[in-house]
Amino acid sequence: MDLMNRTVLIIGGGSGVGLGVARVCLSRGARVVLAGRTPAKLERALAALQVGERARAVAADVSREADVVGLFEQAADVEHVVVTAAELAYQPIRDFDVEAARRATDSKLLGALLVAKHAARRLRAGGSVTFTSGVASDRPLVRGAWVAALNGGLNSFVRGAALELAPIRVNALSPGWVDSELWDAVGVDKAPLFAAMAERLPVGRIGTPDDLGHAAAFLMENEFTTGAVLTVDGGHRFV
Ligand SMILES: NC(=O)c1ccc[n+]([C@@H]2O[C@H](COP(=O)([O-])OP(=O)(O)OC[C@H]3O[C@@H](n4cnc5c(N)ncnc54)[C@H](OP(=O)(O)O)[C@@H]3O)[C@@H](O)[C@H]2O)c1
View: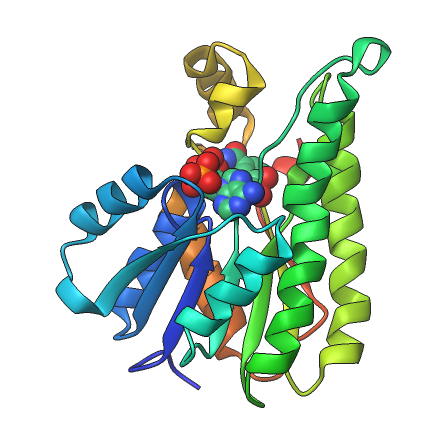
């Protein structure tokens, strides 16, 4: 199944990996619906994509069930869903702000449950849902233990969801480091960190949103892939 004339809903599509997924889907002839909480960010993304009516945006918070229901109502023709939305918390365990941990859990894990629940009611056979976990499940940053737990939980969730939602396919994409707004929440000076990591990685560079978009397109198009965690990390797990 190729993406030509398919509609792809990208929750988190206003920036970073989600915007990369949108670019790759559009390059393959799909229509995209971008979702996120901040209308101005979505408008900026639409302006950057420059594809007219082939891309539109809907404001929604993936951790609120009413928003997820509304999203599927407004994107009634959707065939594939990709979720990159996450509001992450990087903090030392000893001082962790529990409300920040709850928000992270709601956006990344509860949000996945809500999307799976309502996608199951809306998508046709042949459709797919792709969630985004991350290299932290194997290689956590210091102060990133909760992010590691959420990514690991999501990897486990897709295995069960793939069984329950069949014939809809459910997978996870697990990125390595990608330059995006997410790093603002990590609270590090990312330029030297990225340069040092690029030197260690077998591929010699960190990832781009389009690297991940390409992998998400594979998960949408490949009809024999479900319950998979596709690692796209430039070899990060082994260095
Ligand atoms: N970048 C990396 O190095 C990296 C590495 C491993 C894994 N990942 C994973 O890749 C995914 C995407 O990250 P990214 O790098 O693309 O970060 P990003 O640029 O911050 O993108 C996340 C997007 O999700 C949206 N979002 C956040 N919370 C939301 C919510 N509750 N409901 C709806 N939308 C929400 C954000 O927009 P609003 O704030 O406007 O809602 C934003 O556009 C995340 O799951 C992250 O854990 C990233």
